Image (cartoon, rainbow, N blue to C red; front, side, top):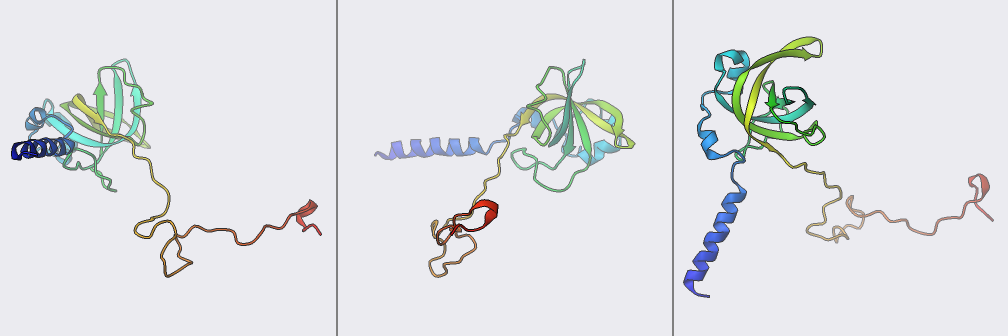
Length: 193
């Protein structure tokens, strides 16, 4: 392989790697977000920041199709470097996304992670349990619904394989096998003779 081919392949792999780590919201829209405008600041008085572009994310609490469009209630979470909501037990509040089109509420469902960039169009006061809560409302310009991650069950095989630690036959991750032959049971659970 020539030196030129090596650098072309290296450049392609680098581009693929960088694109896999890219933010889900376009750079042009992210530039429009005032860096000093935090969720905590907006939640104190959403009307004061009406018309600003915000970039927020979190976990969907519920989605409802209305005459205005789809209303998505989101529990705010801090965002990671790609724009994905972090898996933390911390939130500064809730907000609403008012999407002008019909979105299927089975897809935009409870516990899905979402990232949105859009214009702050005001606030809505809605019941939340036994209180009235003022939600900032966003008209989205870009949204990203994150893929659901299914839990993986099992036990760690690495580095010893399925047989467990070689020096200890009763390791807790070792599969449990029945030793011996099961007794045949007769009527009422007693052994047959």
